[in-house]
Length: 118
Image 1: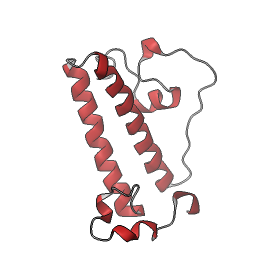
Image 2: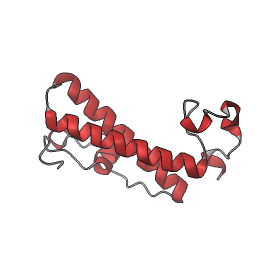
Image 3: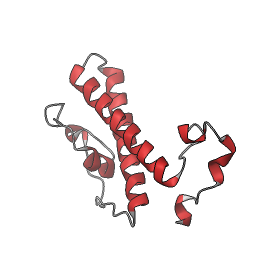
């Protein structure tokens, strides 16, 4: 699907390169693989990757808002991010103060360990 949509990198490849578009990518140094140390870090990396892909595709859609394939891909990645974020928050607690996990107890945001405390 990614090559059908303007020669795109897969989200992880775009994330570590800083650009989802292969034809716009200009290497400026070594590309480092991200190696999460545990499941929590892996989920955070996955959320970051999906977030980056949505931002980059959103910027593209600013200049080509009628590209149906890109809109569909953007929506697919956004839904995947929502699912993974929910999975993360069920296991490790809220990521932001706007988290649904805080609706019942908004003061509970600091009851779980911070990501760097795990």
